Image (cartoon, rainbow, N blue to C red; front, side, top):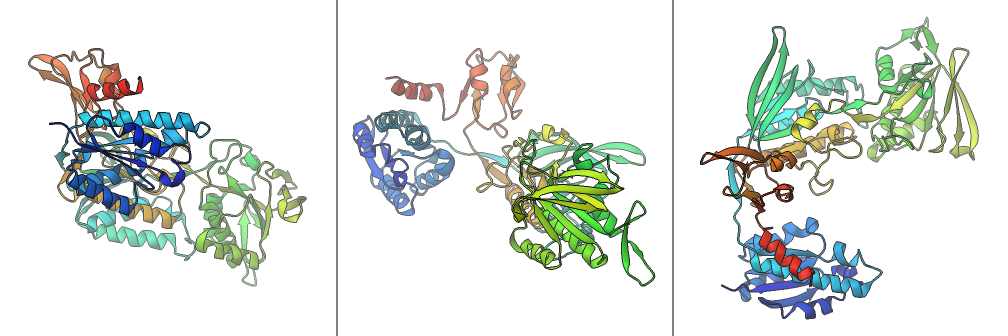
Length: 578
């Protein structure tokens, strides 16, 4: 039966119509075969327009629609929803991107942009004529989640999942849980003691029957797919190593971060005894100090009294030259909190802060104000001219240009120099390689979209939380952990999952199993099976993402992609080549 198609051409509030004559596009395509409706609209994604589209589909009994607007990355789900609400199979909707591929790409050539838009819409119509109704793939999902990493994010995620009645395997490679939490004497801005928070979380985990805690344990193998991951865990014990396998419907990764270690000689580190990092300094002040005869507490380092401390910020972060160009978010606050702790415990100590510009955001700004009010000195140096450090009579001399005092040079002779080091990704890359998790330029794990899908990865069923995806403070890590737990729970809670049906499939009659497809598949979705005594490729529909990488490498042209078949793509190419 001949299809009945409708086309909607969006102005995008001028983003498209300022460069593409959308009325001319409508006139050019309105007589295309199968087209019964062609409209222009200011905002195709607007609520009112969506309702109009639903009404058009019902009143005209449309069997397919084409929307010419912005990138499908933004509104694919929107227009699929319109189709479904109107009773149209959502896979009979085809998208034409005339903004990124048209108006924005050719803003200097309005005639050319319009002609290209016409061709793109005609090509989408050609595909819509051949589009077929599809149904989602239904798979079973085990109601269990493997949480990898038992720092604050992993612990909070595990507790949240367990309270939603999911079975949780909490896997920690160290001998104890907590990660960096136990080293935090005060968590800003509320001043929560990190050790008390850790003790509370440990108690909650111990009370949850749905949590199986594994310490000295490392994930060494995975197989399967969303809903049915097989996770091999190697556990080290007094009797040696043993391997256990757990089945999980989802995997939540919360492996945390490493603190940046300065290079030898970086701001005198390793070469000058009185230069230490912020984590080392926190450990020093938590040890206490010594009281003199009148009860005044005094701070000592290397058996010498410390009466002045200099701090150099952004060591290993916001690097003008180097890999770590990002801000580590927590270290300004952590350094200022440490200097306030020093003032509280050792009132005779002076603090001098050398910064690129303090970044204590939100409520954390209050402790920056408190530090200023109590007499701490702040010197802001230019990005491209960091402080110069040298040793002078057993002390540390720090020189820097101060932007805050009309670029005059400031000198501070301090008994101790603290390098305020930031976060860097976990140096152990084995897990990321095992799970095939992509990383960003900063080498942290990448989410699909920082705003729209902030805890999901491109591997279906695997979520990320906490500082393994980028620098965060404790509150932000907890928030991302709860978000990741909610998303992982959504994968396992119903017992079954609906997956996208746009996957590759193999023609067994022509396939000769040359391994070319399995070699290029980034998701390990291709395996070899026996078909009537012949080795052929098999696509795991639960794992395949429909990326199409296997299609061009197949020498026998035995692989097709559902919804992007050779016939559909050739029909589009024929239009574009006219």
